[in-house]
Image 1: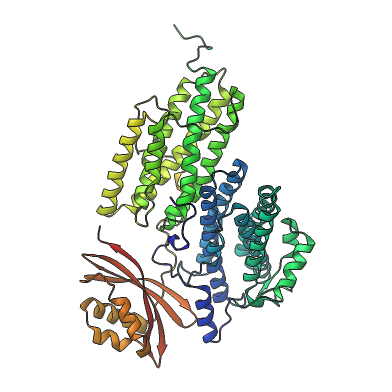
Image 2 (image 1 turned 90 degrees about the vertical axis):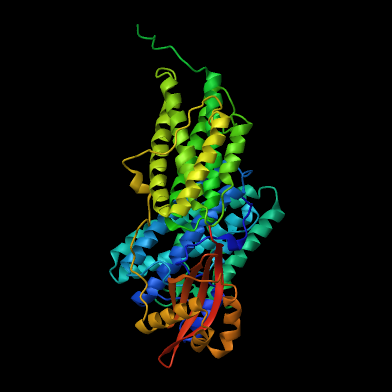
Length: 251
Length: 320
């Protein structure tokens, strides 16, 4: 098996439709729709949940690749990544259940692979910085808001199950912070590149102003400051993320 | 006469050596299963591997932490011989899109059942007075490896209902059994190779999305009819009818894509329908004696008629 594999080797059943995020967004905008599904209606919530489902799938696949791609990394690193594979497989199961709960089906919306591409970084430190801190940090934002909205509309199934997923994601961010530090110990250049990679992911996933600092009901994705603090992000990092949301390119 | 309770079959050194062999196999198996997840299309198989990676990592870790208690270095792996390495290399080799049955057969019908038999053999020989730490690890690994093998065989059974994948999986299983026999099993000292046939009361806990019926894609009736007409026309090579459904400016690009279909075509079906607002992304699978091609298309409703706005061949497979 190659280490790492090419982006386009990511294997899917035929029922999934894979497209570039940019193309999906442009086809939506062309129809007067928001490029990213909000949480204001059941169909849009279903689309958001479907997007999270494929994100969890890609997270499981990415963590699995990390287990395989870095046999020389410390054993404890492999253990953390193997644990993450299991966590993500449960998350997929949870989101399959939630999609069912919302009367959706697997493949109902196109799958984009930005997340998977981020999980293909060739350096282990960059990969954990990008995936565990960048993407799992985004997951904290998205899930925190989903829990809040589900509580508000009285949907305990979504509220409770996603709360457990959020707890796992916070753990994954902590793992990312720990391994970013350990893997780059004594190598400031490697650390700089890894953090740069994470910041490029943060920028990309600000989604042109979709992610912002604000009330759950007022912004499409609100930055989960408390969850991020719990996960080990410093106030300075959170502040920097908030500032970066004000200058993000659209897709 | 009963044997003395302190009679032991394995020395400390021999026990440590076996543990290093187990660790080698559990670690390599765990890494290859992790690597395969992204390469495996079928959701139940993908999720099965995802479930088991963590268990195998813990087995390798438990063995690795036992080693210093047996006067050797922690977390060391050691293959029993070169033939074991060749066996693991061979096992790892099947990574193609259509080779999930081979991957599952290798892990769940060959390696894990064999591991169970090796662990059982060790447990029977491990003295209950002075080797309980090893026996406890063996008990845990035995239970989990049995569960894995049983769950894997259920998923494999579902993926090999058709004769072709079943034949491939069986042939692969035989080849791996032979390689394992040549190695003398994973410990190098045993001709015992057990295959398949394991059950476990909690095997179903590891199985996700197998035969799960989520709501079926709903196609607007007019689109379903348009797709039926389209599939029939493409199968028949009736380009004039196909062209009538395609946006004029997209026709040349669509034609270029369709030239890559493995004609003659004998069957076709809708395999995916995804929504982007009012637009529909559809995947059609076309089959013929030369193989299969999956075409991804974009359909839009224009003045009450569904029109094809673009098409791309996204996957092809030669006939088995």
